[in-house]
Image 1 (tube, one colour):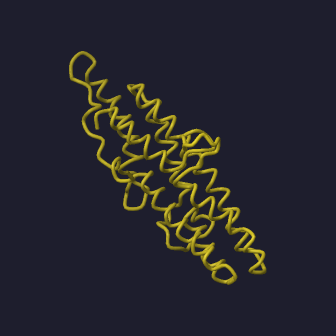
Image 2 (cartoon, rainbow, N blue to C red):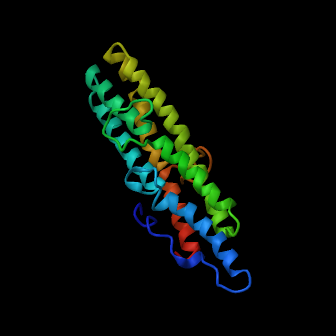
Image 3 (cartoon, rainbow, N blue to C red):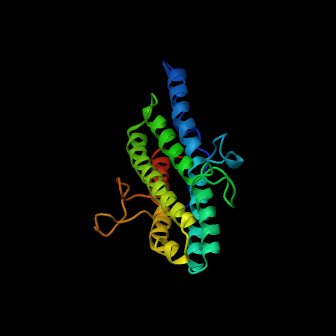
Length: 217
């Protein structure tokens, strides 16, 4: 599922050339451009990849090192070292050094919400784009909120003076790390939706895929 939507958003949005066709094509190009920033290519992102795959990659690194924090329980130095790696993957402006891409989950997820919103507001955006853009943006904003929570928890581990003090935060760190991608069934209806408080990067990917399918891409 993760790789399905990372495709070039093709020619499906380009309007036929006729009366008003050139204007329609230009409007469609703006929709396509912003969708492309989310899915396939954004100049400021590492390797100029899309903002959503960047967020997914950074979230994977954050989750990996959150797991290493947990498995280091009792070893304060190791817990704090891996907590620093979590911080770097979440937001390198907080911790400059680490094994992540140097972009951060938070910045990438904020970019996803911003650019999918711009796609929805562009002239010529279809109902399909506008509908799924709302779903993607809500899920991305959930990720930003969870990244902020996770930053606070990782910083508490970094500032702990004993292993026992650091260990008190491990369950919360692990919970948030899982929710970055998978989201959470907050209303306990048996599924994880895109809504505020629920969706994560997995739901953002799913709704980008539905958007692209609806546009014939």
